[in-house]
Amino acid sequence: MSPRPPLASDEELLAATRAGDEEAFVEIYRRYRDLVFGFAYRMTGQAETARDVTHSCFTSLLGAPLRYDGRRASLGTYLCTAARNISLRHASRAWRERPSGSRADLQPASGPSPLEALLAEERVRIVRESLLALPPLHREVLILAEYEDLGLAAIAQVVGAEVGAVKVRLHRARRKLRAALDGHVRAGALSVG
Image (cartoon, rainbow, N blue to C red):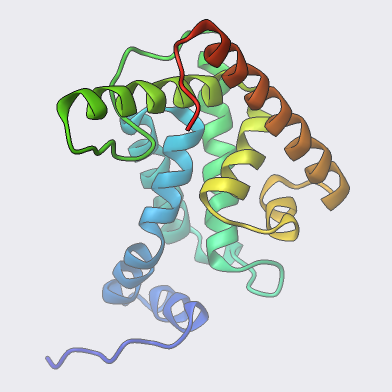
């Protein structure tokens, strides 16, 4: 069997998936797994939960590919919406619990010396904990805007809200995160610059 040339669009891949082509589904998974996992990880703060969310999103897509309507949203937006809904279900169960003492970072810490690496790791931990402390509706729009680089219209589609509501949530999220980080700066736990 010769390798199939890459399909140009998500719609072609989904059509092939519906027809039973496993390779087409694997290509969809390759295209979107990092996006879905990254979003779920930032929403939940736990790699294991993010893996579960990612698995659930793709299992759902495989089980019911006809639910996706390309006229309403891109496949990436559709999968982020699914990840959001599953992540919020997880978050509603654990909302009152403190984030674990895990050292998993939102971004890798690097530095030329061990001390600088330790300080960078501490900054990432503080930002991560401050982000996880935000209410889920604020956290999700901030993650989608800042980490996933989505525009307001795409965020509105993912969260199922009007663009104006997204703007308000994003403004409040940034304000709350800034206040939390300013508190750490004043306490000397976080340095600026």
